[in-house]
Image (cartoon, rainbow, N blue to C red; front, side, top):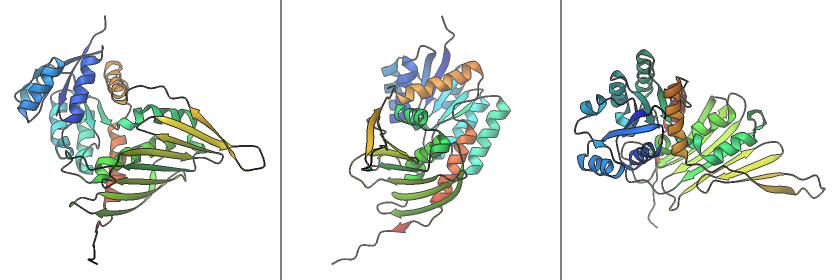
Length: 318
């Protein structure tokens, strides 16, 4: 028998409901309950996964829960996470850590003061394709990284643009794969259908010299998540949706051709791996896999990229 960690989920929209599902499946977790401002949605989620829907946030926070996932809108992260930490809970907060640097810093200080874990849900680190790339390529080999993350705008996103909502995934991946931090940021954005930017082309120069190009938008009619990692003698390409990873390496022949092979990928649901890592940190008192400071570094870069003036698209009638 193992001592189960009493868990809960705060905010059970699409992502939060998936957190509840995984907690209900994990043998090391006891899903106590969920809370959402939409009572009907909370009750539906609780009924699906065999836990309690709490009518009030205060009741939820003081129900003996030890570890909570916060999957509320970004604008609410700061307020909710501080309340959860004050109530003595360990917190996994969905990306991005917060809407502003001061909010993120306050959350990090509160976690330290309360002696509780604060982990940030940059789930792509747990994508099996990313793990395969990390295993195949040493940081010092990398010359450049290209990432494409595009698709239709999710209707649920109301309080952020494509950089804060989507490109943060890839800013974190560049940190993760290179083991370095960002030195320079340049970004071109446009706002086609909203006040927030819906396209972004971001160039990063890391402190170890690696260059990265990130493309994110909400105007492409199909969903794509692709990454290329380039070294002096190899190109590793991965589809982060299908989790297919392929390596092209220089061939010793005279015709300049390449050898192409598939890279082995150990398939595992990223959210399950992420929540297991969170619970392991709680159980063993180890540092979280993705700390509040990691989340703050990503947020800083996203804010720097967002600072570039968004250009509305002007269409001239013919």
